[in-house]
Length: 408
Length: 189
Image (cartoon, rainbow over the protein chains, first blue to last red):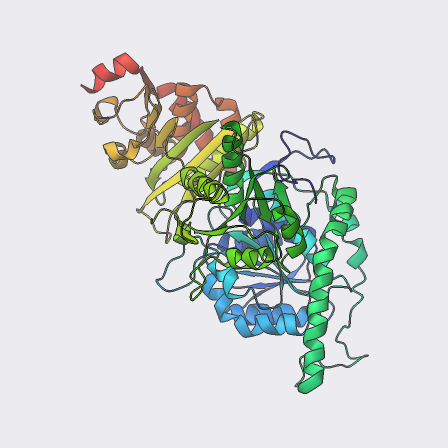
């Protein structure tokens, strides 16, 4: 298990660069700039728009050499990025909410055809009712789409995850598209200190994928992408896709070592464990609420309540082995979701965690907490309440499996 | 950790004020995190922004409910008592109003009344009162220096606008009327 990467506690970056104030969108733009993409094709949508504005500013200033295409919609944005990527280039796009919905067929084409493109999802609620506020529902609509999905807690992690995303996507052992996901407003518009690494350090980190050792579309070696396939060959595609997902999951720890060597600090693994080892019960979440939950865990510890936190950083493929290891020996698990699965009527991450918890002996209570929808605040008191409820469940108190924070 | 809540309207530079202050705090060696909360972007709609700073990294990703300080850029919003909900006892208000316009119901520890609209009109030629108000914050709290604010302005403005905003910060600092607890009670009664 990797050490917590984003709690430097005053630590200075090894490369000596001073942190600067960047919001999540700008941090993402710096990450993209440093990866030297060949193409940026995107369509603006709240809350992702400032990311594009920053990229176009880089372009206007002559710092970004990528070709930029102003497409007429998200479907074309991702399709253009796919075209450049299969031709051997490095492409970037970003979207949110209904924009993601609008590119759905291209989204599935990207993963099914194993195109290693990188796309930001500035996470937002999904219509209807109509809103532009924060939520994780848009990501959940595509969690089965075959992409690798990384979910961030801080602006530094957003920048770093863009670098990791290209390293992972373009690795010949993986060759899958990667989403870097962060919540609208709570991260996209959160300004905090971010260290922008030196270009040489990023070049060094991306050296293993510099030569793009993958099938590349060109006139000298004609080939077909996305052909009509039936029967066993189709099953083989799926089988190999799943194997690639497995490898992607296993590679994050190795990439962490490379990241540390090139950039002087850890990136972290698939799950960040915070005071989890000696915890009586475990809270699980992903995204911005993890920061607040760390404060809650510290407060409960002061009261003598042994709380712990597991923050899922890689949502797909799900780090089941790591989660199982962290849950073993705990009395209860509480999962905080900023999304709802209709029909299950639980949070999406909860469903995953509960499935993993089936392998625990003895069984322990797993509670679903739904909150923070449409930009409502996952306040400290709400999260502390969720943690206390989970603690009580571990001590035998009965109660509902799903609790809507702030509604009940 | 100190928590500051900013109030104003879309187009008044509320979000920029919070970011500017965070950038200035960073220059003073503090950790700071700021974010705005608004829906569809439109001028004139109420906008809030939240800022935390500390010697340690900021981990909370929530809005601010019990601010140490409220910074109010819009005079009409500054006159409403609800604006100051949750203000800590003895808390600081930095507002773009005359001291007499401060709602009597609010228990303010330190009131900084900044003639920010007049300063902005004179220096910037438009009612962007956000930078003058930050000058008033520097004066009333000492949490940030005018120098650090003026340095941070270079991240957001260039040329004539940078010079004008630097003057606005300095004048905000110099022309703010600061009233401490007992006097404040007297002034608004």
